[in-house]
Length: 504
Image (cartoon, rainbow, N blue to C red; front, side, top):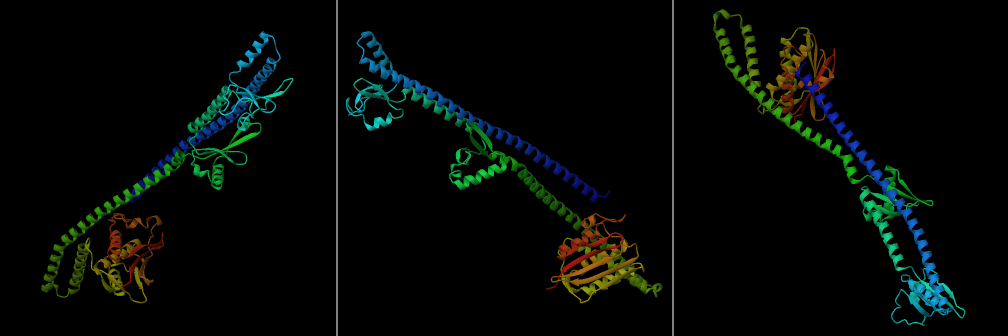
């Protein structure tokens, strides 16, 4: 298994681990959110039950107060009858008894008036200042005592009326119970419900609300929209108040629950950004280290080649001067060509790491020169052709660009096992000159289209995997062009495309 296969497998494993962690995080957070949602729904139901209990308590207190009111009216009637009999009884013991009955009413405010409405007496209240006995009952006092109809006292010579209202104790008890009920329901709302809730009647009129800004329920249209939103997300809770009266509780997720639902995605997003930034940082650092290694190796190689090349050139000149080498000039010329090639290779390596100078050159001449050179050194079973209409001027560095063409042609020859066809097709678009180098070799799997340009990747048993990596660097970093695998089919061949900017 090569390093790139291991690298791909490692990336896949890390991706799977990351997905598992992400899914587990989202699942667990959703579990917590659902648990909290159930608790909030339970609290909303608790609020509904509290409202129902409040309604039952109100009904019970109404019945209780109604009973107390009847008893107080009966007391007033006894008081009225006692005042009636006081005028009719001559027996001192009976007179004392009825007087005790009258004085025993020490809590129910009452006013005795004659049939014309003049005040005859009062009990458990102060007559307003400026009002005298035997004067007409003021309208304000009459309205204050109009809660209950007056009790008629039928004397033989006149009809008197006793006006009364709830006793002070009765009033205080009613107010205390009402305050307790309101405090109870407020405590339930505040302590049991943390989510926004709205209590409505059957016609969707808002009766009460909790955990909402009052401005949100001030506008009827906004409130109705809010209720429909709550209804779409959660089924409303029905509070049965008895006697056919129902209330509806609409609620939404609390702010904490909403944040909890979003949190895992925010967390994963931050984690993904962190991983991306870390990956880019490490990739750039690794690429910088590789660049330093490439530059160092290239310059060291160029330096090491310099001495033997100079020495070989000297020996060739020495051989030319020997008498025994007459007639072998062709051999010496080929040796000189190879030495020149070595010098060119050394020069290419020396340019790695520095910015090369680009000058306009004829693309036709450049391609023809390199194809001719490679054709003489390839098998006679390999055919190379250039298909070009118009000639184009391109900005290139001849030494480095020749290196690119040699690498591509040599790789194509190796892929064809020394037998096949290599076609170089030149075309153009609005901004680029395009060179398609097609071979009839083994082809490249689609999954390897990008990997083949990585340093160290090679399909050859003795390959270093540096040729295409250097080729990509020369085209894209030095010539501002593009190189990629345009298409490839296993067993049929591969097409590499080089795109260079047009000369302006």
